[in-house]
Length: 398
Image (cartoon, rainbow, N blue to C red; front, side, top):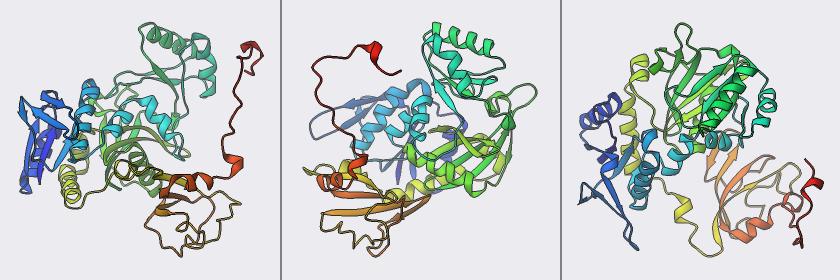
């Protein structure tokens, strides 16, 4: 395997460990400054240049994209994807995880615990928003802060209102988040590679500091997570489109609360806490993927006219409940079931005799019109008649 490590900091601990782990395993690996790439776009031949020379011949890329270069960095990763070079994390996943609001919006559609969060811009909406998350104290976060920068604990409503107003005046976008008091000064970092948690640590703030980040002086200790925390971490990483991720969670009284999904998690703190070769586990995973790569079905299978990939849900009361996939007649409709999702269980290439249950979700490839017709009519969005004129906004429901 020939591995390109994308990093603007070749001397930092994480980059050095990844390079060391790849070399120890006999792979050819090299660190490339992400900002020195040039992206060439031409019909049928996506290319990359590095320091003015054609860049090719690599089997995999491991992005370590810093927050300050997210836009250009994800563009470079996207170009690797178009050149069919396996990337440890997708460009979409990196972009989604880097924006805290976007990350929480995506996760909120799924059954994943998270602190109650709100996002407002108008001054008059601030106080109601604080009340909706349970009142003071609250956590105020900048959307793109890292390593604990831009995370503020406001002990009172007046302080929170003043901080938010000040940040808004400097054109900063902020989130207001419920303060989980039982987890004050500590959180959990789960390190996800592929479909499993390979290591986990608890970070504990020191002194009066409420932020537990290692860069803020937080202490670490290795821990063994229970299944609820492991499932939340793996599911969060997969939803974000990340194969290598650090998932930060609060230990709330009602279970794990996902705060953030990091696409470029640091290795120093977790390797020192757990004494595990995390860098080596990442390299082993990449090598396995290069030998047997996953296919991005979104790009591979949606090119046929009228055919594509879609998810079909089986609600309670559906005619398909109790029937096998075979008896449901999907094959006759030119629909192939790729994966069945049942709760937290993922069943790839399910047997045709497997009976369907309420709540099942089927990832399918096939005739889009046929799949569209499978949606119960009462759940379809009704089409509204074309309006001749807009109604008076004063008469619209608030």
